[in-house]
Length: 362
Image (cartoon, rainbow, N blue to C red; front, side):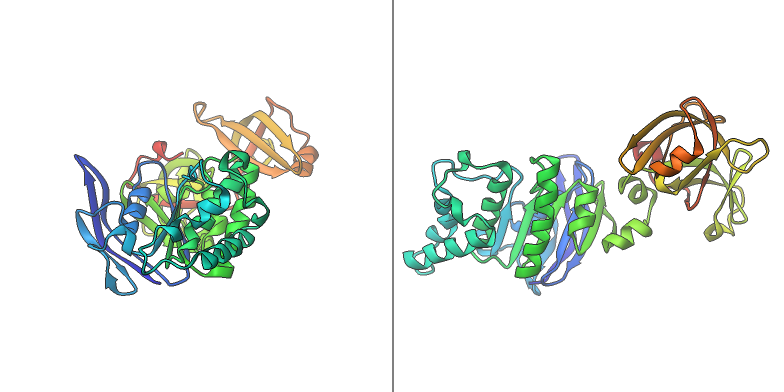
């Protein structure tokens, strides 16, 4: 089932949760709504589900307007962050719940319900826990049972609100991979809300980056990572180093140091920002007269194959830079904390006149 979101607006008192949001989601697609707390992603999900009503705009399922269709008639499955399992019911009864409360004319027979429950528990690889109670399960197992319960009613759309947010990092990573494999098998149109950039980039077919009730960018994980559409997207999708300067003739000048900005060759003495990811910041031993920005190495954390460096630029003592390089390369440089080094970007993205305060993004 395809979903069309058309000019949706929602306010809670004086707070604008969504402002004229439009989005198309293809049938069988897995889409992530990604953004910080308060950006409107959960509100949009609840409006799609029918749990909230929009002040303006419409939601269409496969071309049919569902704006006034009751939540129980939308054929939507919903998975919450905190499982919402019935504690007094066994795993099997939890999964069967949605089928047993259907109107009599739509309710399958008990034998069919039992077969469906077994099929779903096998799908989520937990058929051996059918007689257990939620309190006897781990967090990851509970979330898989919650997903099985949502799938029991054969929804045409599956909505997941921070589905792994309450789990520890290792379990989250395992369930992300599992969810992706499950989606590839079922092809149910799915939308999940997350503030975890890694989760969105790893699982989704497309990522919708939201900020302050609006969509900043829509694209494949590779698109939004490699070609951020705005300073907000660049800053939100991972750690970045920010350099302020002035752009003229395809160069950004930061003090007596310049960064190539060919996309802004027509700019003339314009305020500009350069974003450099830690892995794109080269570090070398200091040599007088050599190109680069002098900085002091304040801290070096070497874990496994990666060295994470914290540096303070000589010209901006209140500013901290982060660089990532291979542990072997760091050892070859022979650097120690307190040493002066030179840093320079291998790759940078320069923006003119950002719409948001960059200090709030980093």
